[in-house]
Length: 218
Image 1 (cartoon, helix red, strand yellow):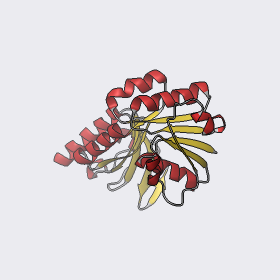
Image 2 (cartoon, one colour):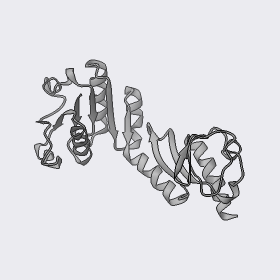
Image 3 (cartoon, helix red, strand yellow):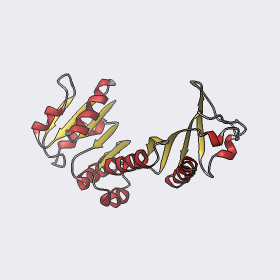
């Protein structure tokens, strides 16, 4: 598979290297050639120095054959434009942009661009670790609209059926007991210390956090 990474900062270089390690062909574009020093010495992809929006640059990078483009420059507007061009003009099937400033999220929404907002994700993750360490976020889809959470079943839930224990609209994904994971069923009777993975929206996870916090303070 052919991928183009625009921006060779720490994130771009790490992403390009991961793709390279997974046997993909990778082209990295950056305006500043010195940024390629962020790539590990054993990286064997292509590097192109120059302005990505200059005529012919994307063609030179092989965008016509690319299966994916990641725009991870330090400019939110540039990232949005790159992904818009890749998706709408060149019909690249998979594009994703990095968002630096959450205030610019409407730009990405207007362009219909998939993006990862590192400040927003990091803030939500750190808030969860600070305020509710017993409910841990382990994965987020999109920009956190749906998340996967890990929790340890409290003693107060012991003996409850799984369907009764969870707040409304929270979906069980897996239950791990004594080191063995099992698919969840509504009639499963919980035991204290079970590790429960659930999915939900920020609203449903907040309801779960509130309940667990109340149990901890009781």
